[in-house]
Length: 637
Image 1 (cartoon, helix red, strand yellow):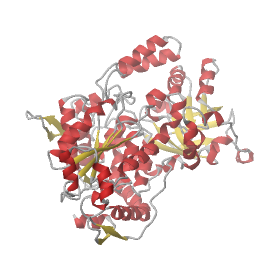
Image 2 (cartoon, helix red, strand yellow):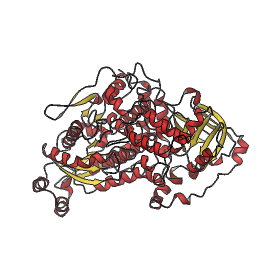
Image 3 (cartoon, rainbow, N blue to C red):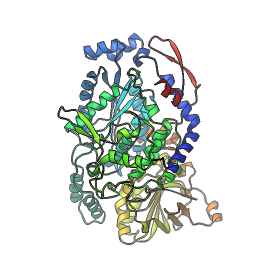
Image 4 (cartoon, helix red, strand yellow):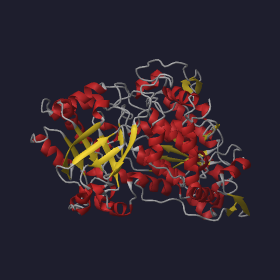
């Protein structure tokens, strides 16, 4: 089917907008690549340090300058359920790459923190910045220049975006992302939400709450609801950076291990030495980024990716903004209902047809670019597959099922749950913000009510517990942006706001903080940009101002006379308590340099231009020149 005209026009706009920075990025890739194995650039002393502790046979392979070397970069730790399964992956990977004539080394670890553990805690104020820390840690792991490809082991919120940003700064290397998979299904999402609301109402004890949460989060693997972690996994599939169908296979199963082995071997055979060179910097191009946005919208994915995808794109020299999300959202149908947008979890989604079915439906509807590179080669249709375990213990793939096994969870593009992607841009004299409305009923998508202004979650919750919020209002929660306090998630507000809405009150949230999909059924304008510390107008709002939030018309307005509005000065707040303790003082340089939310809330910028013709050096230090462009890359292949 022909590509949808809106997808085509948005892509063309992004390509034109990104041309200078994308060209600079591609030139950087060519400058980093050498002829022969990458370790050929090292002196004998360098290389001896790099393999000193290696087994004799692997050391011999590295000495010969012939076999490719694959880096393992992992987010393993055994406190977090999503990352604990990675403990045994390196040994599987090392053996797997030996079988295809390559060598793998554990290059480095990256931090992995969990929003579920730090929710409402001071540590949450490190969460967003951990993404760029992970990218920097990835760069440290790869800085030894020993490697010809890399495997990235990660799952959750900031970890996968951070790994991919780091990988793109080494975009001359092939990259294969290796998931751990979700935990098996536990307490239903409906029951989990119910006990949380009962606890917020004082009708359940802390023991009741902990029992419910422990039944929901009960084993190894990522959480099974469709938050940022599982949105990451969906995006790695749609972007062609996973093996097909790898995202939602549970840990510690034979198929999971077989997929890990196959991923390792794939990384080893797409190096520059193989004749099938597929560097990640050429896979992640403008079309790939548009595909990622479409996949996010079609599944009701996490609004955190209105930050992370912008940052990922920036790392590849590509410039996207919230207008792009908004325009695509208007024409991308909603094909899934996964909690918090429905009752099912990601295991149900996988059983209904999974990512292979989803990608095929979007391709057939003209909503995804098929003509992209992936880790399998050229063409996204190769990812419309489902993995199975053969009798020999190896993974093989079949075409994704022709029909959904459960249309309550996954539907064809011809019969979507909604005609749009459920994510909208709202703007006005309060700035620009995003709303996720896929779980918000139409009657709640417009709220016009007096503002109640809060400077912290704690202030809001104190007012709720005191009973002073039993009215119609728009909560304006400010000083939650990246410069102010690191832009923590504000999930603690969700049960209280949901209770007020259930009681018949017209309520909404407007904040420069993050809320992700957990905003659920309550209308929330989040990531308001610019934030107050960047001169943003949330600092002009006063208690009692009438705020209009309208998802249908895209309006975010304080209905205050213009002369009154412009006569006001921005409020200030003492943020010093947010800048010390729990390591927050170590992140002051992030707060002082971070970009606006719509620019990805990054601490790095777009690639700086370098000459389009650059000198490269092969293993014998013989200079070559290679023009830097996607077209030249394809021609060289």
